[in-house]
Length: 423
Image 1: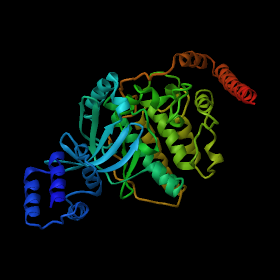
Image 2: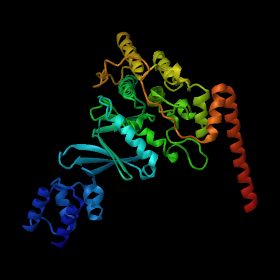
Image 3: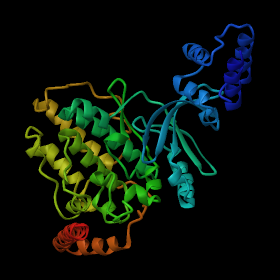
Image 4: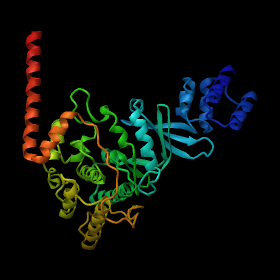
């Protein structure tokens, strides 16, 4: 009986049940209606859906207090990324299921990040669009930052690509239309994503609707040097393969930067390859600044030339050469779909009805969205390189190649010296 009381005491200390529910549990325990051994009781509470396996493990380990964040009880762990951990949670009183993202402590330890989080969340609170994961709540308590969002069943486009391979052309277009509509809405509210990529585009369980994740959190990454640069050599890493040239050069960004990210995402979803390949981060970074994307038709010849033109425009080096807004991108892609259906030129495989939300936001007019620009944190030497590239892309590329050659040479010299010294 002692073990049973201990587990119930852990539940009480954690605060994961209402007083009434806890009293009913204690009443059942007093009547010997529950197993008396710890594991048996835990399994019983799991089978009756009072606890989840995740909750039971935490309680048995004496970590029950970790299961409560403000008004929310954590039910399960959904995933972990550079920004922190995501949990399936439930509002204690309302019972509503939510996704709760707890921001990583190495980010929240910075005062600037906390202030920026508060500003961004006020903007995110304005977002209301079928292709954007809805934010319900957010708070900063000391160094604990969390965002409470709509809980959506499904999986990311990154996961779909891993299991199914490149997407059918029409399906990729439909998903991109929805993502562009959602981004356009965010830009109109002053929110720039800064980190659009397949893992941040979620597909609902029915395969119909795209939901954009992590809007407003990209600003926090800019306050965390380890999320954008390796400490050792200050070379951009992480999501560099999706970065716009202006991001890579440390310039201010607006909604057209997200458009570039979306173009790279489409290219990747269609080919499972990146448009700006390279053997190292610096080479991949320099290609997007000084060159054009690798021809997508080399990887997938059946892609319509009209789609190639749209992707090239989305991934233009200069922001002013891209579409004026993500709304204009969606319009162009919808015109392509309409034309393909009329001529029968669209890919015949995976023909699906238009996903829910693909025509959302009909009032969105093409034109540059009014957004607040944010300057990322980059090392001082990068400003010099960015200025050189802006004046002379060819000259900048030569400098980049020289730097790469110098780094390689220094590496070879270091290895040779090491062998001579150790020999």
